[in-house]
Amino acid sequence: MADRGRNSSEGYTLLAPTLVVMGLALAAPLALMAITSLKNQSGITFAQGWTLAQYVDVLGRASYRSLFLRSVLISSAVTAVTVALAYPMAYFVAFHARRKFVWLVALTIPFWTSYLLRVFAWKIILGFNGVINSGLMRLHLIDQPLEFLLYNPFAVVVTLAHAWAAFAILPIYVSLEKIDRSLLEAASDLGDSAMRRFLRITLPLSMPGVIGAAILIFVPTTGDFVTPQLVGGTKGTMIANLIEVQFNAAGNWPLGAALSLVSMAMVGVIAGLFVAAARAATRSAR
Amino acid sequence: MKSPPSSSKAIGHKKSALLFYAFAYLAFLYLPVLVLPIFSFNDSQFIAFPLSGFTVRWYQGLAADTAMQHALGNSLKVGLVTALLSTLLGLTAAKAVTHYRLKGAGAALGFISLPLFIPDIVLGISLLLLLGTVGLPLSLAAVVLGHMLVCVPFALTVLIARFEGFDRNLEEASADLGENGWMTFWRVTFPLMLPGIIASLLLTFITSFDEFLVAYFLSGTEATLPIYIWGQLRFPERLPMVLALGAIILTVSVGLVVLAEHVRNRGVQKPMVGA
Image (cartoon, rainbow over all chains, first blue to last red; front, top):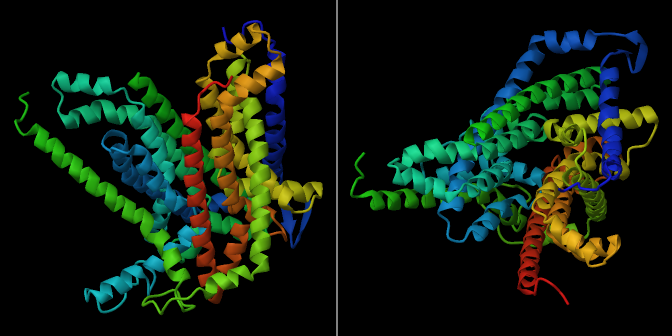
């Protein structure tokens, strides 16, 4: 009914500008990145011919491999922690809050300032003379400032779990809000306990929101070099830091391009698994 | 299964536990954000406790900081252009996929949404390589292009959701009553789409205004606000001023949200259909 008597060429015309822009700004640059990653760099200029040396380096060097692994582990931890912390919050707003809108505004206000400053604020909180250390010393719970709070993967996870919280709360809230309340009543009437009802109805039906949140958080956090640089220390360095160095200080663009493509493929595969899981979850929920 | 007699009490416990959690979570969200205004009024260049006394000199310093104001102007420009272009491209693409049955629409949507699955740093670097190969300079225009990559998928998602809840009969009724295509768009389609368009403009503007990773590789000599802030973080003596800037951004954005909500409420009270 929707396209009755409509000319589909009109539709393609409408779609074309967006596709052209994305083709120019996305497909062409990525193709160029693939070409760059195969170039032979000697000194500061490209030499003749092609080489797989960068890929041999990226996949073969143990220090790079452990950096990839650590990045995936940190981002996975961030994703899991952020979603786990946000879920009860979103659940409260969707099912128990009296003034939902006020809660949603209150939950998003902290994100209305610079991302860099939100990250930097954690340096102030976790630092040597920071909020936590001076608070604990004031209470005489410790004599010396705790040094394990900052400059490690833990600090990166805490900071990112805070910086990306809105991207977990909102999708999960939306999927919880969509749940047909009569299904919950039916489950109770049929004798399900509150826990069983949650596990059999609420949780599966909210999975699309959970998976959506996971993708929205996992993908960008693997590419963030700001947070590791500000609060991660040497043990919290991630793959994006190495990429950034290749394009600035080290000036090794072919290696940087190869590192970028490999991490993109890695993130793509993991995000693809999330999407497949989301599809399966929605199908089984229907 | 027998139902325990104290089930309503158990529910009450569960609810108060959730309420307690909600406030604890709010505290976690607000603690870092409150650090910004607190230290922006602290009379010491060291960001550490104990506090030293009240001052507004960091705000006075900001008022005299032309580099910051230039960066702010750049960010506003980039954000505005990015928001308009991304929303326009999102609007046409969303209309195409929701109003027409097109072959390959799914693939096109997947392609447009691809940036959601690519880390921003890779998007920025690939555009950097493109500009270098074509011989174009790094510029704010390049930043806009990079930001559009990030923003178009967001705009598309918001606008498709709006189009899907759209009653096509209203457009057909308008046409049947003799309105031409342009008047139908202006008096029926556009007002119905307006909330979606505004949501898309807001979301894309905020995303662009606060975007760092892409702009870092593409902005060249023209700093956007996040680039400026990043530069300042290296100089400890500049930090209180940066925190003052963060406090101002926060205050202005909250003010805008409250204002937008006020306008929205007034809009709702107005009669839905004009004469």
